[in-house]
Image 1 (cartoon, rainbow, N blue to C red):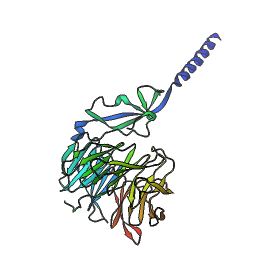
Image 2: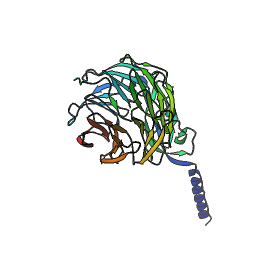
Image 3: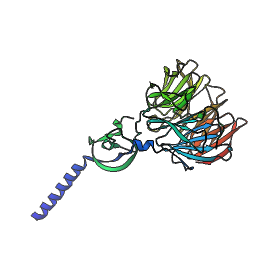
Length: 410
């Protein structure tokens, strides 16, 4: 009997100690950095046969050439001479790429912290002709699914960078000081073409005359491209916080950020001058401008912070004092564009929405085109090109409405 009592006591003691110790631990998603040697990164550029897209990114159109970014992987080149049946030409592998711009025969692409210039005068022999090293600040985007980051896995010097994350579940002691909790993280054949092309509203690159403006989280990075083959980096200009997109109209740049729209004067191109801002609740925020109005979509329900998703119309007739005039509820807005009296809004899984803006600042819903996921749009003079989830859509304008020309699997 005494032996049984001792065994029972030992059992309860073990359970108590185990439970007590267990209170000091939690199951978390731990993000460990995947790194790459910088020199290997810079030697990895390649021109490959056409590839299937992995993650749909930005879109750019110049003449009969369509460029589609494969996020962090490179650029798909598509011959659009026949919009009914586009054809992939090649895949330009540029690791760390998200944005692109074209002037003349030269393509500018970011590669993490570098700006890379390609000669695309002959699309069968694309060549890297220039690389400006370390001209962009690089803050690895932290994965939303991670609870903590193992910062011991970060590079210990500047010879390598973080290019991805390995996510795994682990039992870790609560607030182990070897880990950085996410809430405390700092966030970091030739085709005829015009001089420059058109990017979507989600673009972070914009060429205006002899200057390329490229926004990062906080700055406007400025490059003199009067010699288009050999850009010259100028001093960056601080632009605020959470900068996401850039749009140009005349002598002004309109920057979309997570907390507002910033307006800069570029009368002196190498030194953009802040004029004013329109503030809003924290949300993802592309912007386009037409006439006296700026059209802004705010996407909520994500890491940007907002709950509600809306389209807002801002009166910018006085650029020193932008004023919101109207607001409309959306579901999951991303990019948008304007052409004539039409406003086109990519509303994510809700499709491509068309509005009549004749009565701006008030707009009227016209029609909706259902697609798997509408991401960004470029309204051209005679057609509209839209990027979706792994697909490229093209429409023409017929009596004020859109007519689908082709649906191309990327």
